[in-house]
Length: 433
Image (cartoon, rainbow, N blue to C red; front, side, top):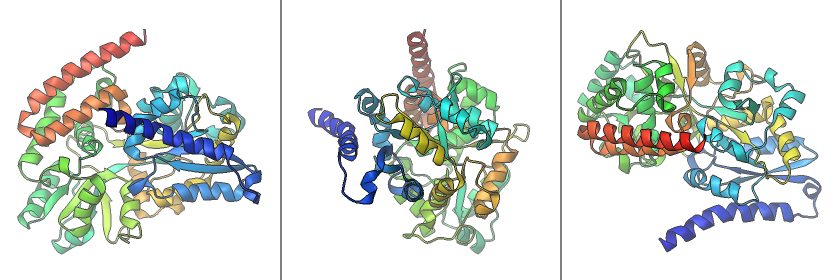
C-alpha cells in the first residue's frame, strides 16, 4: 500500500513539476520572448497521433505564446486530474472528454463565454456539438478538438480472399461471423485489458435495440440496470461470446498491441473500435492504407424501428479556474478552433474535426463516410464512461469486465450492477442537494 501511495504521488506531482519548470525556465533564443502556455494532455502512446503537429501549427503562427504540450499516460490522466486540480498549481490548459467527465469537474473550470462571444465561435461549431460538448449549466467551458466515431474496422485482404461483404443487418453479421469461424479466422478481436474497449459492445447493442432516450435515462440514474432492455443486451452479447466469435480471454489483451495486431496480422477479421484506429493502422509501424488494407462499416441494424444513433467521444480543451495564465490559455483555445490546427490533429488521430472550418474535401474516404453516418443519425451519443458520472462508469466498466470473464453469470452481474449503481446515484443526488 505504501508503494502504491508513493506511485500515485509521483503521477500527480510530476506533471506539476514539469509545468513549474516550463513557467520558470527559459532560454536566450527567440522562443524565450514568447509566453509559455502549459498544456497537460492524454494523447499518448497509440493515441498520440497529430497532437504535436497541432502544437507546431500554433507555435509557427503565434508571436506571443508558445504552446508546451506535456503528455501523461491515458489511464493515469483519468485518476490524477482531480488531485492535480486540487493541488493548486494546474497547467494553463487540459485536454478532457466532453460529457459527464467535464460536468464532474465544473467547479474547477473557468467559463469561456467571453472569448466564445467575442470570436463568434457559434459559427465554427454545429448547434448539436455545442449542446453536447460545449455548454454545461448554461455556460460554455469546452473547446472541441476531435470527434471520433465507433464502428467496425476490418482487414480487407481477409474479406476479399473469402468474398465477404460488410454486413448491414444483425442476421448478416451473424452469418459473417459463422463464415469467418469456419475458415479458422477469429471473427472479432477484442482487447479489454484497459476495460473501456468493452463498453462499445454494451453501448451499441443497447442503442440498436432501445431508444436513445432510454439510454439517457439509464446513464442519468432514471432507469434501472435491471430493466429487461438491459437484460436483452447481455443475452445477445453472451450469444456472441459463447459461440466463439471473439478471441479467447479478451481481458488479458490490450486494445492496440493485442486486438489491433490480431486484425493487422490476419488472425482476426475485425474489431469494434473508434476512428483513432485509423491513426494506428496508418502509422510508420504498420503503413496500412485506409480503404485499401483496412476499411470500416457501421454497427449493423438490429431493430429497424430504432432510429440510428452514432457513438463516440469528443475530446477538447478546458481551462482550470486556478490556471496561472487564463487569458493566454483562452487565446490558444480560439486559435485551435481554426482549420489548420484542427486538420493537423485530424490527420494524425483519424478523428473528424468538430470545427466547421475544415472542408469536406480534406478528409479521406473512410472519414467522409463516417461524417455521412453521423449526419444521418438522430443523435450523437457519448460512449458509456463519458455519458454517466465517473463513479457509475467505474462500476459499469468493472461489471462488463466481469461479464467477459464469466458470461454465463450475466444475470448475477447485472443485478449487482443495478444495486450498486442505484446506491451510487442516490449518494450523488444527496451530495448535490
